[in-house]
View (tube, rainbow, N blue to C red):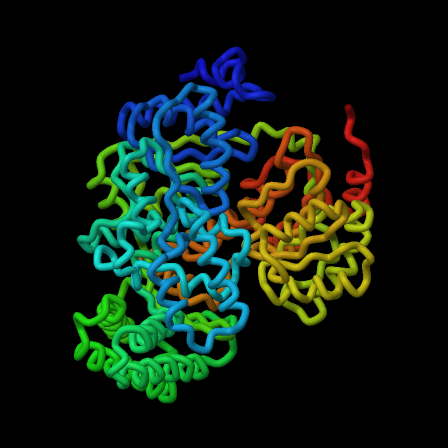
Length: 636
């Protein structure tokens, strides 16, 4: 295995610009040994190690069925279309490769046809998009919605013409033989290497657990890239939830079945309208948007209880009316099954006395989610690994806290896994500078955004933009963006004003932009070279103490005799900070300054744990010194 990564090895000979890296070679050897020995391996590989090649080469050499799961669909596409073909060519690999996404990423021919036939009171833009999609069907081979250029990625038409686990008709669908999901799954079953994403992997695991065959085939080797996300994603899928989107979607399908196939049962339209109305009414009872609260507390409110009872009644009415027309429409039969499922979920969500779960709800301006999440997934995850013998590899640049991997391995029950910590090959001592400015405003105090923007402006201007400002809250993000736009002439880009991909494109093409963003830009963003040389983080990314899931996990930790701050809050904040910091230096030639605007980093004892977990760069508290570093030309 080591030969592939040598200076005269296969990769150096076949890939232009490939340079041997000792850490990459060590990781490849560890992955190869894990595959041979069929055991679990956890690897933290610092930014720049080249972990993707380090697991791909041994995976392709193994001559086994391999599943590779990535942290997002964007990374999944990049791995499948760029990294995997590069390594396959270099090693002369001839095995079959497949990309598999969740159902909602593929056009559903049956739902498209139903929407066109039903017509109804759709907006003009949505009707126009439907026509574009009918034309696109004749052009696409795989039905992957990300490849449709004619319709915006966030267009309202997509949920209408894609299926979910809930609303897919399965083998009963009239278009089953032409189905893009079925074709993608068949390709994955026949392939040697299958690239998926974590959300699909976990959803699939849960469906299999309930006794149904799903999308992802079994494999000899399973590799999780960006594995730090797995514990939280697994928690979501091992819990239960019911959302307004699901309820409105099933109401729409009942209405479409009435308008197209069961026209003589007018009660269907009435019960669909009632479900829609009671769902919207329940959302109004939840108050302000953008809030995540405790479901136990919410359900103690009398007005909410009444609204929930009306919602339950409308689901029961849909159940009773649809039951009378079973067998007359595949769409209605599937809707009936979902209504049955949602009634059971609602009943389970109301049983808030069960321990071991966090009960929470979340609402946006239009939608809501009611959910329960298990406080630990370790037992469940260990069970899955024991059932599926083979090799399991977990890797990320951010798994450890102060060079200790126990926070990650404990959450997944990976106590028997072999572990490996590989530092970044980047020369942070010369490439980077960490600045925690003096005189910072107290986080959360009135006027903090204005004062912070004023302090940071000279530094941003000294760097001519080329800066990410990563915020821990949407409120601070909007406040800082407003301040910067009012006081600077540089282009200020704000997360949410357009898609993530377009924002990155605008940032790079502008050459002097300032991007103000929150959670989704803390990871999975790779801007190399001069385009980004200043990363500012507004404060240490502790999860809000009001978050019900965090509260429940802290209480559970306390009951087990642990220390909630040290065992729950602090490790998660450290991992998140490491992700944000990792945006700055992406290559051996990158240079830049990292600014963390939180005095707790130097004033509180736990600041040492954060600092001990970050790359070993020189530090300063002087903004002028940081500006001087940015103005310096790197030594050739």
